[in-house]
Length: 345
Image: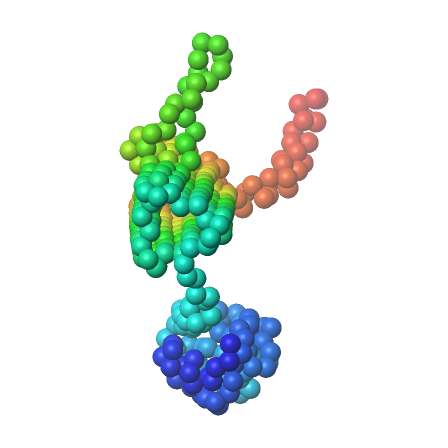
């Protein structure tokens, strides 16, 4: 990375206050800024660092009123956080290696169809009937099962396993070691006290512009489909069971598990380590706080927390009392002492 501040300003549409010719060669947090670095200020609580940072450039809001002079050149924009993210994306695209062709160690079935611009990395396996569209990258040691369809511009990172019949849209990113389309957890008790496997004959459908973190597991449906709608973002180690439906532009943080046949609406936000039981519905734009256990339907725009999850405001008020239970118990015992003595007489 080696760019003039003016070049960066042109990319993100910023007004430059300071030296536009200063060279920038790295990114940093504002509190850790060093010479020739660029940072951003989006949270007002970090404003004091703006006046002490050693970063050569800082992206700030147009609305910011300086309390004192700064050493750094300022790049003024409408939304510093979005502008910094835009800059990172532009830089990532500029430095990304170009992956071309099919590695000689890859195993591709003769009936698989790969468009000419598809990249296949070392020791990957692509089974019969698979269909992979243009500009998609299949990185090393990936398994693509029979009749899998993968759209244009996708990135499938090393070690991903995609079981047969899975359908993936365009511009989907799947990070390392995720498993897509494994059989759902279906067993029925038998007369011997054990369990018989229920065949999982459905599929997984992943729509356009979905991001899936590393070590996620998305199970195929018993019949029908498990569907991840467009724009969904999954963090690492998320588990979606059979026949789950995730609505558009929903985000799910790490270590969350969603049981079978549950339907999640559009633009839902789910915090880390949440657990959601099966066969319920979560309404559009609901918010589920981290480590919540959801055992009931959640309404549109509702915010819940706790296990079992309850209304967020109610939980917050209840938690105040919970924290004080020990001292409240001591006060009750103290108040009871005179009454106990009276009763004894």
